[in-house]
Length: 252
Image 1 (cartoon, rainbow, N blue to C red):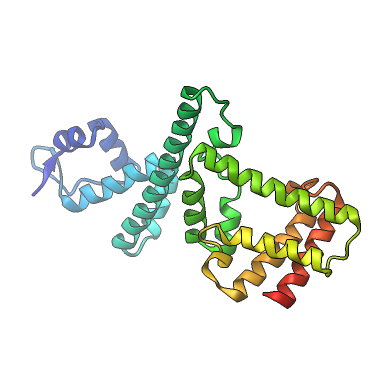
Image 2 (image 1 turned 135 degrees about the vertical axis):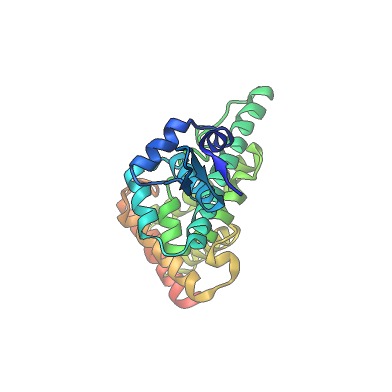
């Protein structure tokens, strides 16, 4: 089975001029050229065109696409990579749909939409970091869990988090020791709060990785400028870190 350049262009929603350009730059040659000069494309060529169009949709330029295709050994592996990229794009779109739906529901109900809810799915700020530390599944499960909540559920969760932060700040200002019973009860509450988030090591009961995660979070509260002021001042953040480290070492 094969198709003429006009047939393929029409099916692909592009122009025959585009197909000729792909030939000129070495991306997609016709399977054969007839005696009459007509270009014909077989199924293998259509597979290659599909991949070119997919990469173009992902924002890749023609030189980059040529490099990917030139370096590739197995077409099936390349197609699997495309599927993964498309599934990721689908997930982003679904998160954006949920975000806009949240905004619509809030407006219809006469409520004021929250900025972070309205922008959910448009800026997953911690995605790369979470994936690097805990894997893609951890990010997807926790992200889907969060964006699957209603507006009221998200607000309730945020209130719980704010109450926990306030309790930490009060304990730090009271001068209680980070290894004392009160601080350690707050650390236990903090870990319990984390365990309610699907995809995290604490939710899955993975003790070794949970300890690593709790210690890592404690360090971030002190070292990461994104958390500056979260616990009122540097002393408060250091208090939380030391309490979480002590809890992770002795009680997890």
